Image (cartoon, rainbow, N blue to C red; front, side):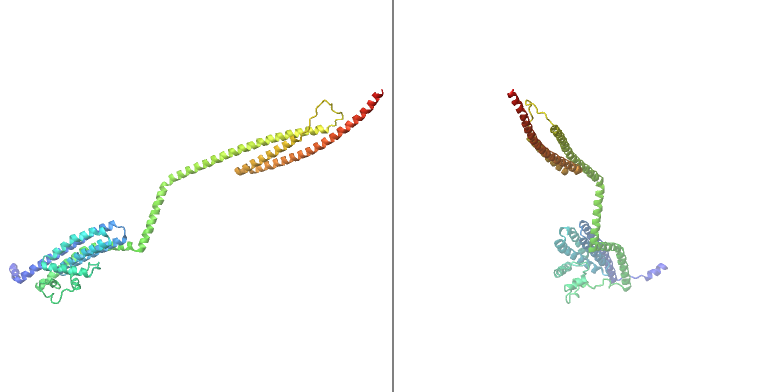
Length: 442
């Protein structure tokens, strides 16, 4: 009974209703194909863009690539979740074609050159898949007309780079399509604008179908939302990195890291560096010590020679003084008895004393020159040398004046001796004269 009652509620589909059901099934299949292509499109663009970001070190270039990747993926997912599967397919064709044109004109030729070629090749590879979506409901005439409209729009807008959100409806109106009367033509490309594919269905079935499509689109977009969110967060990171303040901070951090690395290298090389510097200091110190030692040896040798010369001079002066003392002692004795005529008397030579004085002067000059050398090479013996020079000068002065006094005394003595000799000679002559007279008388 329940089966019979159920069968009673069932009714046979008419030819129009069967056609509408088939059309709804076809539209559902087209919608699934658009969604599948949107996933393929977002993944195909994302991979070469990520390689481009890895290869470049410029934060601005990474940000531009991330913006392109995010806009392409967002546009593809937005198109795939549209209400009209036919319009979605047309929008996907416009997106793929215009993006490939921008990549060829702007990225490869103007901005990045060969580095953007992999991204351009990815767009060229994905574009035929977008055109395959519309091949199920567009004729060759429609396809040619769509190519013509896209080329015309690109010629009018060569400076536009953000084509991710250019849709077929707005796109067609921007180039003046459809023209008057063209949208009402059943064979026109623009007859798809505003077309409701579900209009032929029963209202109850239409509501159920729209609800099912809405649920499918919502689930589809929610599943892709985390991926889009990741892209947006990554773009935010690139935006922060491209800011001048962030660049300055990164440069400061880089300088700090370089300084830390240099400090680490220096710390690692510090033991070897200290050992090398210590060895160099010791070597330099020993060289300076050897040089000073040689200099001091030469100075000591010269000082020894000077002291030996001073000793010899002192001995000579002592001998001279002893000779003078002997001479003075000789003149101080009174010789009342004349010396025999046969004994030779030593003649006084003033030249000997003059030679002795010249030798004293020469010795004093040598000592003074030696003292000057000692003063320049060894400041520590300066006081000793100065005292020695003072003593030697005092000795020379004393000796000179003693010689002067001696010469004067000798002159006076010679003069007195001459006078005495004459006086004694006359007196002896006077004594001999009476004796001779007496002998003559006898």
